[in-house]
Length: 319
Image (cartoon, one colour):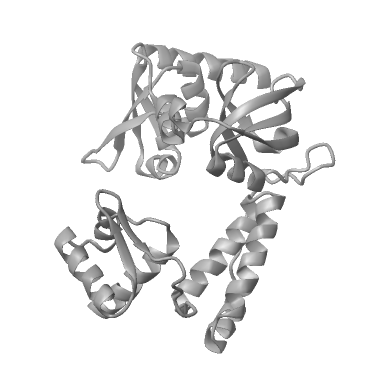
């Protein structure tokens, strides 16, 4: 990227947030902090009112507006892909908001970019085999409200139906963050009823109200901390070694990170020996069972015995 393009990109980045740290600019463009300071000074000298707060970052003085942003064809294609993804994986609330935003974006595109998007429209698809349509009982329209509550640190009440026993109750929570996994959006929140952190599936919420009561964000862990703790293995976790054929290894590459993968070695004969750290032999064994024609368990013995016993049960059932 040449300097003119970088200066323009920095200007857009400054307008995208209230405060932008110099380190953020440095990391995004892979330039030194000294270069960041020089680029910001060049923008200031060109007439852009950029303010700075020591130890905080840069900001554009309120009231200054950039001319309309123009998109390249590649950027427009990325936005179209995002629209397709949101149409499949968003809930009703975010699908509506994203559609409205895309209409505004399409309105400012040049004619060539509009033609480019129309030519791609029918040739990009995002499939979700786990998709289940919303029902009147679970309207699936609360993701936008939850995002608002997270950003504004608002206590939220909801009527929730648990997946494991279909029981329902009203919860008061401090929402921490959301993530998408295995076909569902999940809300991580501190439950004031249980006095502990809980993982709620957003599509199991029947009613939700964002209250006017604020909570102190510093009292609770971040979403990243919660997720990292969930992936930590206990001290008694099993070290598992499995040798895969080259074909079997290809199957595993898309899933192994979810099952405690820690290392792999490519052998001279093309086989791949993978190491995992997992706390449940049964859980790991049931995951790997369909691929056992392409794999050999090296250790532990307990996993070998589990695979043997369950295959014997299957064989006896279908004899």
